[in-house]
Amino acid sequence: MQLTLDRITLGVPRVAEATDFYASAYPLATTGGEPSTSLHLAGSGRIDLRGVEELAAEVDANPASSGFRGLVLSAIVNQPSEVEALLDNATSRGATVVRPPRKRLFGEFAAAYRAPDGAVWKLAAVNKRNTAPAVAPASLVETAVYLGVGSPKASATFYAALGMRVDRDYGDKFVDFTVTAGAFRLGLLPRGALAGDVGVDGRGDGFSATVLTHTAASRVELDALLGVARTAGARIVTPATQVDGDGHVAHVADPDGHHWRFTAPA
Image: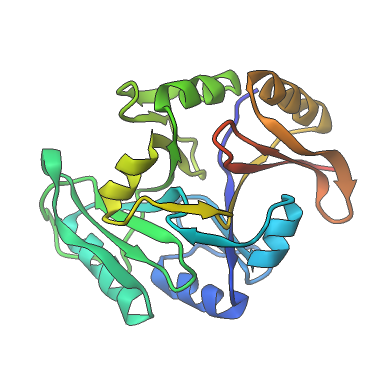
């Protein structure tokens, strides 16, 4: 059993507008016949877009929220020029810069923006300087989700129990996990530090408008995952049930309240 972050569902005010934004903001692979609201980021995981009230109802949450949502999505590219190109592309389509592009502490080159739907994205380069001419569209090295938590060390213990393997461990400052091909990387930071990293006020509460998805191989594996999650401190929001067209689906909230959807084929 190994938890992977296969999909991210974003709750958005206007699905059609959000679809247009993300379809133009990032390089996409073919969707394989899936609905246009399911966007396969080239070389990484998938983003699904749903109306925010519909998504909140799915996880039995109040859709209202204010301020910082407690998580940051991230796109990682090869070099600084690609960070700048992605940022220019996003802002030309309505995004707002919250941290201008520049070299950060320890040499990281990064920027951050707030998408029209309210999600905060960090753009980062794996190389500190440009080593080749800029490529259009930029090629994604990987994508990630960083969760704001009370204690990264404690939260890492929870996710390790679900089969995630720690990659970098800086105790209660930062922990992340190895990434599976075609999936998102998961990282953990203190909520205030995460907000500070992308240049936003850390105050806020309510629904995060984000649900993380893991696809299990079978109902047996799904039930086993739910059992481990419960023992490790998760709250089971809805038990595993068979849903027409979606196979078996269950919803849990991790110890810090971040929402997950566990699915398995029918």
